[in-house]
Amino acid sequence: MTNRFSLDSPIRINWNLGIPTLKSIDKIIDELLTGRILLLSVSGWEKLPVNVFIQLISLFNKTDTRLSLIHDINNKIELDSKFLKTGIESFIVEIDDINQLRTSNMFLYLKKVGADVAVSMKISTQNYKEIPDIFRFCSKNKIKKIIFPNITVVGKKIKDVNNQILSSAQKENLAELINSNNHLLKDIALDIYDPYLWKLINANTKETKMLFQGCQAANIVAFIDSVGDVYPCPSLPIKLGNLKQKSLKEIWASEKRLKIRGAIEQTPEECKTCSFVKECKGGCRGITYCLKGSFNFAEPSCWKNIKNC
Image (cartoon, rainbow, N blue to C red; front, top):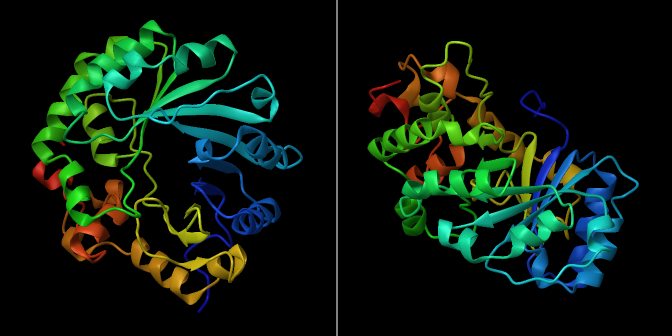
């Protein structure tokens, strides 16, 4: 099978370190160091001893890889000055709700030591109404970036995923909340992964064009878990291979990966007559596959159900 769909290797990787064995860490690190990784985002690192993690991360200092740490605010950590000299480009503090922001001292500490801090929250039915409060907190505390990534599907039950996803009506309501509090984002960059929400927010901005290039799972994006299993992205629960058995290059050249990427590239059957499909490309293919069992459907909260698009 020829590789006409994608790159030879991913350039943006999310790695959930978790509590791996030393053998699996060594293998994953070797693969990441020899690959052409431009952006490496590491989560689950809090479970390792700080000195061990510093030693691992320092290995990337002589590479072109840009490092971001995703810190789950539920995990307690203590950092020292050595930690901040390891070449880490940014700290992304992941939260579930506004109360975690208000009760944690982590932001104050990271700002005090000069770290570049961003807030990240996976929007769900439980927290989307808190967005204005999050904007106010970030504006008051001079946090320069807020990220709204897609939800993580790998390792979760379908029922739990389904309960998190906003309906079309809820997404419209969220867009109204964001637009009515847009003044709070004067000095804040807002990074939104959801093309539908992005479109709603920018619907009345003539200068703004839809820049979404389609789902990049199994193309420039990959997700690696703590045991070395490789997935197309955190939102697509199809295992491509394991780094203890095959190299990342071999996994990326595999027929399975190419077949999945080919399916993602195709216009979903349900979307072929839709006038918006050239902009949204069917939305998040991972969430769709998780809930529908196929890539041939539109994402559950697609534009065809949203009146303002």
